[in-house]
Image 1: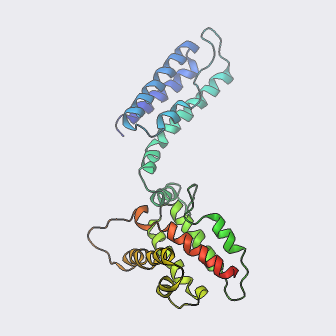
Image 2: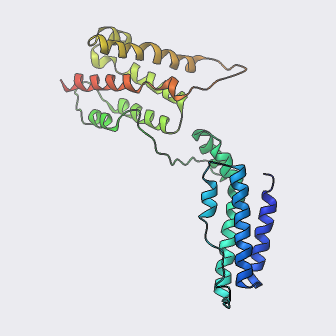
Image 3: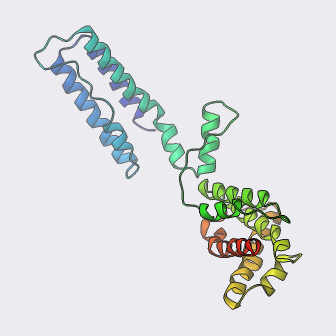
Length: 254
């Protein structure tokens, strides 16, 4: 990042001033440095919130202009400078992470900390409404164990939350292929063609044709010179899927 090293050197020089300079000199130098970094961040990374992060770091001062700074005040100010310098040191990684999708970001962070593990901290809407999952969980059926269906729904929500759109397509197909016996059928095509009225049939056929075809495309296509990854628009079958799960609940409740 052009200019970052220079800003870090200025911060290191400020830390030296904190040890010996007068309060007014330190305050002026700190204000000038913070303003210069803020301007650089704003110019290079607009609309990212990074400028706000920088501004929120602690004030660097050692006392009032005419006061006699204590050793503790200088030590605390040095610590505040160190926090600013650490923020600058972390900036390239922060910027790189913001440019990645969530799966890429999770993997990059795992590599950065040198661990063979992943850490997730995401919030998103649910593709399968949690109330639907609770309804499925509360059903007791002598003929069907819903544990796998419930887990597929939960994993579909996780896939959406982490922008794992390939997984979404495959999980949707897995749910569709999993439920036909509940309706007394062996294939989902039989369910789609015979269950419910015209509107419900249309939605179920959407799962059987469009959603299945998209999943098949990503499951069975071989590697090629250029790939275009799916977006949420391509793999979101949440409306039709909710209707299917509602029918599952009705069938098992009866």
